[in-house]
Image 1 (cartoon, rainbow, N blue to C red):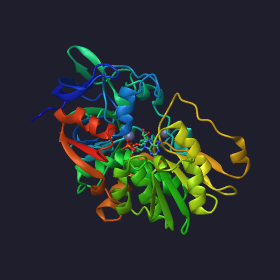
Image 2: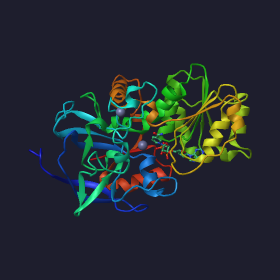
Image 3: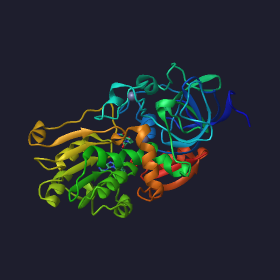
Image 4: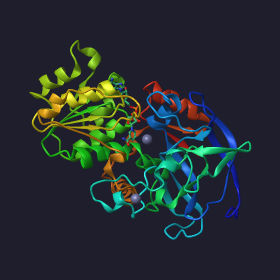
Length: 378
Ligand code: NAD
Ligand code: ZN
Ligand code: ZN
């Protein structure tokens, strides 16, 4: 016991280079500096974005500095706090947040956005507020993915990138609220603002897409059409409330034409949860003229999306979202409470529970379309 103030030696999955398998290594995690918190990670989901930064680096994604500890969908318990931290104490259950909520910046003071900019460029570059990371391995600094790095037994987060949750929260489930489930659900309820009786189309039926389906259903959608090129995803999607399933590969015409036919002109809301610029275009063209709303949730940073302005001129709205529009520190504990009271599914997203040593297997399952969410338990 008594790790406070000391370097902790523990295990983490290190990405030494882009495109290479992760290597589970012994790392050193330094004590938290002022306004930082050291967290013992209990569990972490494996999100498509982790995979994409490793394998899409320099193509769809900006190249991040390596070596890097990935993982941004974690939950854990506070081990110790740095100077000046008042909102957290050792033993608190917490979720680290890749999107902070400092409460003070221009964006935090506005009800119009959740995009807090506190230390943004630093955490995007894998370091904390002072320009360094708290993780080292073999004498080398290891960068922290989005200021989180949950593929590690311990990590250090800025106090603005952390939220305290209900003490009864099951950490190996609520970790999903650190990214995928919160993002998809919020994309439907906060960003698309799906209305009762509406017709929705969700492209991509992975965890983010299924969470978007859950949001459409909870908002009272009359029909939710699920689109995926992998028909193995359809059974679970139906369990989540998808009313019809479409595989674009079963049709010779573009999927937006199939959807227009099915809906009598297009959906009220379409949500892209794939991260492919061609699918983004299909999603825009799948929502109806006059009032259709298309929300881009899938991630790409460097690729360009083509669109015909005519589709916007005819009254469609194109939007995007980061983390489903949630004000992270305020809203993630509320989502945890919704789960605890049985109003928000989490269990249903988990297809595999694996150890840290199996993290590369989790990536293979994700890339091969065999998992929805794998949870790494530490
Ligand atoms: P996933 O890999 O589990 O799911 C993607 C799904 O899309 C799969 O079921 C796949 O079969 C399907 N798909 C692939 N090509 C398709 C096509 N052409 N048409 C229809 N379906 C197709 O991924 P996930 O973890 O659910 O993440 C989905 C996307 O959301 C990723 O791009 C991820 O980076 C992004 N994301 C964005 C945010 C955000 O804040 N905006 C947060 C988390 C994840
Ligand atoms: Zn994610
Ligand atoms: Zn802020």
